[in-house]
Amino acid sequence: MLALIVISFLVSAVAVLYFMRRARRHARRYGTDMPQRFHAGHVPRLGGAGVFLGMGAGWFAAGLLTDVVNVPASIKDAAIMLACLAPAVLGGIVEDVTQRVSVRYRLGLTIGSALLLCFVFGLKLDHVGIDVIDVWVLTLPFAGLALAAIAIGGLPHAFNIIDGYNGLAGTVAVLVCLAISHVSLQLGDRQLAGMVLCLLGATAGFLLWNYPRGKIFAGDGGAYVWGMVIAVASVMLVQRHPLVSPWFPMLLLIYPVWETMFSIYRKLARGQSPGTADALHFHQLVFRRIVRQVVHDNEAKQLLSRNNRTSPYLWTLAALSVVPAVLFWNRTGILMIFTLVFIATYVAAYLMIVRFKVPRWLRDLAGHD
Image 1: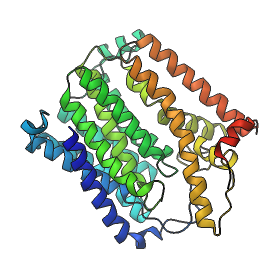
Image 2: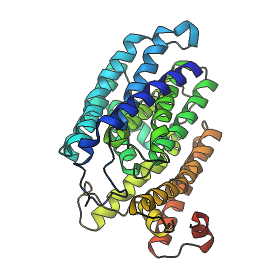
Image 3: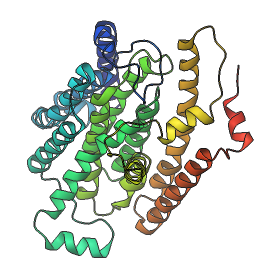
Image 4: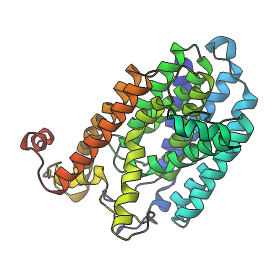
């Protein structure tokens, strides 16, 4: 499988480099007054296109080199899955280039791609680990398919929300892919492991240029690739292997999922539309109130340095859910408890930062130049 990672990495790295050199004109269309903007200069947002190409190359290589890499994959399945993903990913890329695709339209595209994937590959969630809901899912026709479609169509937008700083969403995606591949290999599912390891390799190729130099961003296209492929892999894992608790992917992905749910609640409580962009996400508060100012000759270097210092805080937060998820992937009760603990920790930390009650030792971790 190492060969698949290398192939995906190299294709992605070269493709991202190409887009980085050729797409600077489009980067000027990204408004300097956007509330979620925390960088200086015009940075291309087409890294996701490179990730998509690198991952696709890895999938096709798995189909061509089945005996060599020992992964039971087919070129036909790879082509069909890429075709099903294409409407959502291309919609995100068009938004990255034009800034003219509405949130509602992009949500429709991700749900549409999710429904295609569910129908073509027979994806569904027959149980969620809660008896009342499980009875409802088994009773109502297409309920399991609807749950799978919502999960697959919704997670891309969760990744889009946490994609705020260099290396943040990409590294979270790498951690999640490692966790899914680990459990898949324990269960002997090399096909599923190979699928997410190709995404891991392609993401690493993107991160080569994104962190720490910030030469290119993943954009909506990248977030949609990460979210949809990881969601599909999660549904497949639970559907294929009854031993895997449905709360394994829930805890594994609780950081982007809860960030999204908390953001929706926060905006509705203030009378705003959930689709309205703001600068009050957890990672943005960490940037403004924990990471210290850095003295540099110009604004661009200062923002880049603070940007890069922000992501490790959120990587640590994500690891708080990834580690117990991997350790207890078949223990529903324990996974539920850790999920609740994470939510409580997140809310407590958020309120602490908002109220300027961050411990001094935590601020000192960022240091200053």
